[in-house]
Image (cartoon, rainbow, N blue to C red; front, side, top):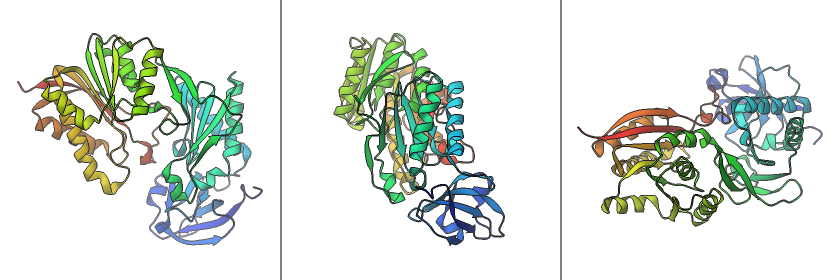
Length: 405
């Protein structure tokens, strides 16, 4: 597209609006806009100005979305071109090399890397990209070229690229959901090593981009409580917490997930790590299984709760609170006196304060006392941009659980 680096619109805010933007936020909403001058294709670049004409930066414009402008830069004199995008990719990769183990990591995390709506994950020598913004979709080829180039400078030859732009949120941008090869086809089951544990990642059919990289160091954090322990890993997905417990020397580990596909992959991962003698998996609804385990009188030294997001919207938060409260009550009842509970929420709308209050309510309801061991968030390759609250979504607690004395 010849016009993709051309600013074709000027967006002017209403007086008194744009408070989030002025605080460093990455978005301009449709109800904050007084006027739009200009035209061009939907998704093109737009200059943003305050009500009095003061320049506030440049972003990508999409009239299909309530997020009308996603900001690219705050310096209005900046020229958006190929080198601008390559510099953003270069900065993202340089940061990851300092912050995390890059064998498998998120290289680009959307707005938190000032590349709104773009996610790029590295699994060994395979890249998986997810494009969730109409405006940024036009730059996808440049971003991928830059990723290849940056990795090659560190001796990493990218073997293949797969697109996982099949998330439902694309429809809110007026885009079709899509996935497929952006390189020559390759075996989409890719082996990675994280924390010394081997995994087979299915980048074609796995959840989101194939693997939840954000829990990398939280998985490592539970290890010190697992030696010689009986461990229950709920919502195990492809077995990552369970396998870390097994690798730490747990006596026995049970991983549970409702997805038969995920459990099959978890079993395969246990085989890769020679842990099938101590780590087993079961397909079951966690909400149904935990009461049965309680009725049987089962107790565990460590219980891990890593559920999917119970809410993806602000309107469903009350229902989510009920879900988190119930699952934490059930989990707490299964922890031995003096044992440990690891519990988390990956929903942005379940704020840290709300999640903390919900856990406290669950503990009070089942007469358990909690001693906080540690509070953690997502791995540093999913950086939290303080001016973009949406980038702070993962809350992870480790507690020692005591019966009332």
